[in-house]
Image 1: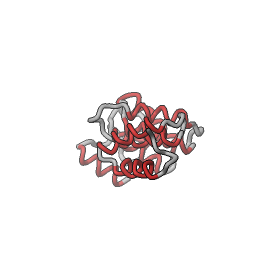
Image 2: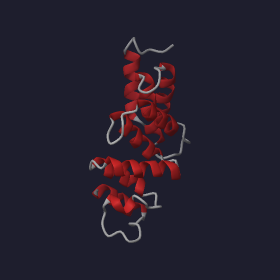
Image 3: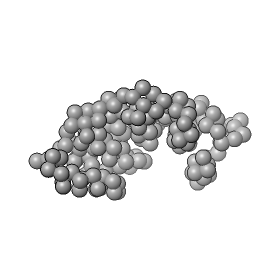
Image 4: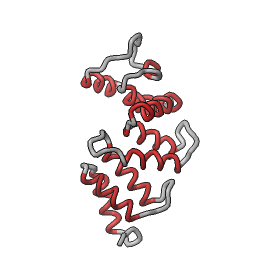
Length: 160
């Protein structure tokens, strides 16, 4: 929670009016975008219901890539929601298609590429996976570079 508060201070964003603590409850109905960061904190503390509420609102209001990724991870793992790989994949695909300058878009492209490579919620499509992983790597995601190297070394994952 300290990390989220530090981020809020760095962004020059304070607590919503009437909030007297750093608890996630103050952010459930907030119209401030900082709430998206609090969704992460809320999920990490195990309150997935509140995290889902926050993430869904952030996706609806701001098309927030970070929230799409975290909500997708909740659906992949079944954390606080019914496990739904198809819904998770749809969120990752939506996040990956955001503009290049969107925050966390290269991370979304990495996760979408992995979903395509492994067939998580979508049919396996290694050529598309490579495309998205290359875009993620170009955006600075070292994990994407590593995943591409693993794909190249495994004859079962090579693409034409």
